[in-house]
Amino acid sequence: MKLVLIAVPGSGKSTIMNLVKKRIPELKTVIFGDLMFEIAKKKFGIKNRDEMRKKIKLKDYRKLQELAAERIGRLKGKMIIDTHASIKQPLGYYPGLPSHIIKKIRPDSIVVLDFDPKVVFKRRMVDFKLKKPERTSVGTIREPRARDIENEEEIELHQTMNKMFAIAAANEVACPVKIINLRFKEKREFEHAKKAAEEIIKMLKG
Image (tube, rainbow, N blue to C red; front, side, top):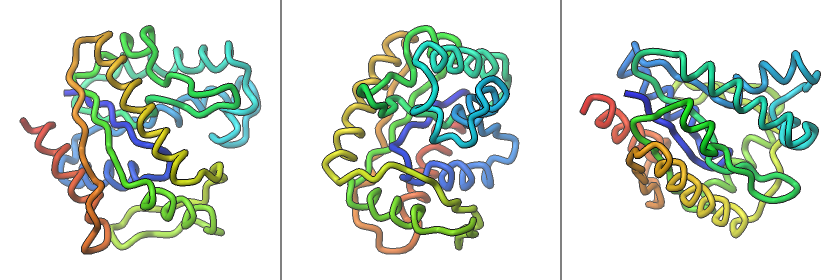
């Protein structure tokens, strides 16, 4: 079972993946952007992940995607791949899973997390204000990120673009798309993350 996990930046994918892995220790968790960054550091001297979409030419960005996808395609076993269906760039929204990339990964399902944009905005503000990595109450590490500041309307648009691109990618490899609705108000801390983790665990065990 190979799942692709999609959500807008700063929504808490890493926390969700860590919660899933605690329940399924043999699970491989792959961060597509980290693989691209690893290659970009060597090839272009990029200093952090946020620089990739701003400082690398489009043709080079495409090559980085392809090299990372080839690595993932060679991996075996049960895994979740953390990636983006759409990447906001200066020229517009760029597809994170175009035809030639999704065909190399060949997922069994694409999972899209759907949040209230107000919640994502607040979480991004926390990341923006961090001076150093912090451990959360569920044992995950929250790190400072130099994210672009977007308003709630822009975050909502990005979520819409994610769904559209995810459907297009799924069509290329004939796999289902599951949208997990996390727009409800949390009654306790990390309720969204725990709800999403439970849904994903059902899929991996199903």
